[in-house]
Image 1 (tube, helix red, strand yellow):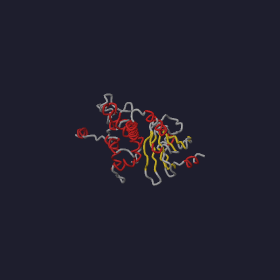
Image 2 (cartoon, rainbow, N blue to C red; image 1 turned 90 degrees about the vertical axis):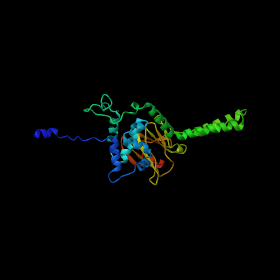
Image 3 (cartoon, one colour; image 1 turned 60 degrees about the vertical axis):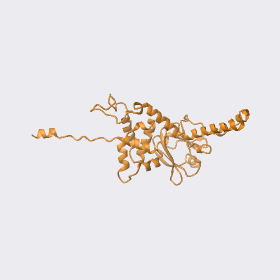
Image 4 (cartoon, rainbow, N blue to C red; image 1 turned 45 degrees about the vertical axis):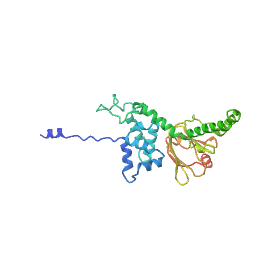
Length: 287
């Protein structure tokens, strides 16, 4: 009789939360409940990307490096262990060998499963258009500048007349002179540039040698830049004495002051905050 009862009892197996459920619970429970829009503004990450992370919809974010970078940034902001969240997402996306069943659909009850397939496995056409949209969104200022130059060239052609080719040709070197900016000899090939509005005057330039989260705040504590930089990415720091930086991987960021590379500001994987981004402070701290 007792044996039958014991055999009929249902064994309660604890359900492991996905990375998205952990992120959502951290944001919506406890003392620091926050709206996702508030966190998105603070991190300078689009709200729909944070929603995609919480829903496990990794195909919405075009590049794997952005998925993992946004997740690490989000986890740190919510007080979670970023390495654990990133590891869990890699397993859910099938980026870790052996994390998914052989069939790829999680049909093996005894083996691990994936919450979502990787981006390349799901709707390649959608992934392509998402990448194109993201590229245009991030580099809109260059597209706008190019369009303005094309319009200006057309106006000059009609204004000066088709026969006055010499005057039109003389306008081309002016564009080249404006676009030419003296920069240091970066150690890593430039991948993408940020803060280009400060490019001509910046005396402090940051370049990622490794993947690293970088946040820059002004003297009032307002965030002016927050992003996961990938190796080769460059950020031009605004000119001023009160800008401070936080580095998620201090050893992975090269700091150039007045065109010269200063010694590393920290070790690989070391988080450092409150770094004053003024030439005098950076140079004196390394003496």
